[in-house]
Image (tube, rainbow, N blue to C red; front, side, top):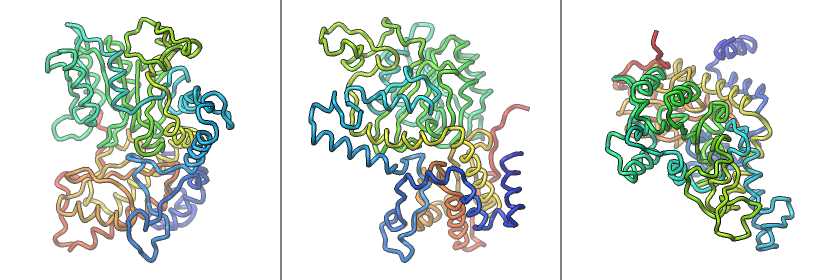
Length: 467
């Protein structure tokens, strides 16, 4: 049974149409993960909009977890515990901790819980810095340009921080401008075809040093076929890295089994660690005991058993720990630990099942209620918890303002894209219904005779593979 067939069967069983808000409520009552919503602080409409509405104490519809996840209540609890520990023990908290989390080994609590989320072994996961800093540190180790192999392959619309990091690494190594190799969609298409990426690797593979794409494309919401792309790049002799910022906590990952060389991600989107939260990274286990692997080093990357001997003779720690340059920042790591405690109550498989239901329901409502007034650019077959919507420029700002004024928190990407991201940890089917109903009402408020249509065909754009 397909996901859509499941939704239709539920509608048939309840006697409710999918467009009926009561159907969304029935789906929420049957949701096995509904209990997790209470683990999060859900802003009210008044809090989200900054106004004083009659219904303002109702929860807002928060569909922006792809930008900043909501606050897990456990994040506040653990952060407060660390503040209390600091107040009561000072430096002693590094080694003796009333909650059993001595700061000197704090990273271990995070890597144990993070590893299954990204499909890694604990030895392969590190905790430090922020995303772009980690990109630079990892590229310093894995981008080893030669006269023959000097190119880095990224997508043409990579998030700017990735683009800047790669571009500056190329310049730092004194490589020519053609070292930046861009994978672009076909003319008239918005997403990348896997076969085109594979063809590019096959054609340019002997000159590519590193393939580094994003697991989920931030703008379109496309999930790349990471296993196939990694296998093709490895077969061509390339190093393979992934920026899984929009994938971690969103879609199931198998970084170890896919044989990825390195990866990194921030933790404040689907992983809910808070604004500017700590970043994590992955280095495959095959490098765990390679002391000769070139890297930028710091004291915290030294082997933990002899770190305090202060010999100034660097001995890298095993695995990803040997790439960490500074000690773990406890206060921002505490909030991530609070979120990971919520993740430990479920699995990525369960979250993925609900996510597919939510986005399929969202897609259906948009198609049936909004129709050709919106273009969904996120592929149906390869997507996570995000749908990216394009509106005619004449109504774009009106629709976005209506959503935000109604307490439907989402984000806009100029010139005409609105991203809606129902996160399965805390979003509901009723959230999805309310979002689409708000869009419907916003468009209905525009004179129907003057309502612009999308310039392009507005059906869902599927993941077009060759026939």
